[in-house]
Image 1 (cartoon, rainbow, N blue to C red):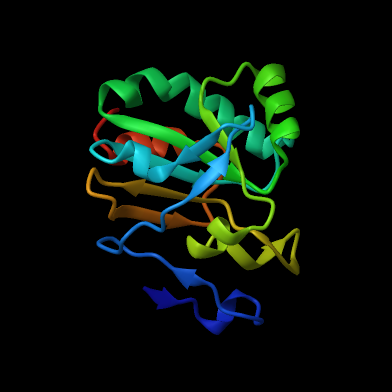
Image 2 (tube, helix red, strand yellow):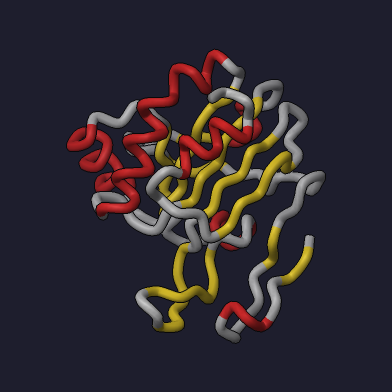
Length: 168
C-alpha cells in the first residue's frame, strides 16, 4: 500500500491499495438491511466499486451500466458490490427507481470506503473537498486486490473494465 502524493489537495493522505494487497474485509447492510460480507464471496472474483451518492446522474449511469453487464460478469465468475455512504432506505429507492440488479451496500461511517482509499481529498468542480473518490477494485478468489482504479469516470467505466478483463 502506498500513500497518495500531496497533489491530491492536501489534508490527510488516503491509503491506496495496489495489486497483491489483501482486500479489506467488510460486512455492511444492503438495500434491504441484510448483512453482506466480502468473505461470503471467497472463491469468486468480486468487483467492489465505491461511488459518492445514490440517485445522482453519474452514480446512476455507473449502476445502470453494472446492472446491464451483471449477467456477463457473473458468467465470467465476477460478483458486483457497490458501496456508498447512503442509508439502506436510499439504496432501496435507488435500486427500485433504476431497476438495479446489483448488490448495493451502505457505509455511513465511511470506514470501509476509507480502508479502500476511496474516501479523502478530491477535486469537485475545481474545488478541493473531502468525499467519496469514485473507485473500482477487482478482488481475486483468494481475497487479494487484482486491480485498483481511483478517480474513475462514471460514463464508460464499465465498458472499459470489461475490456480490461477480456470480456469485450
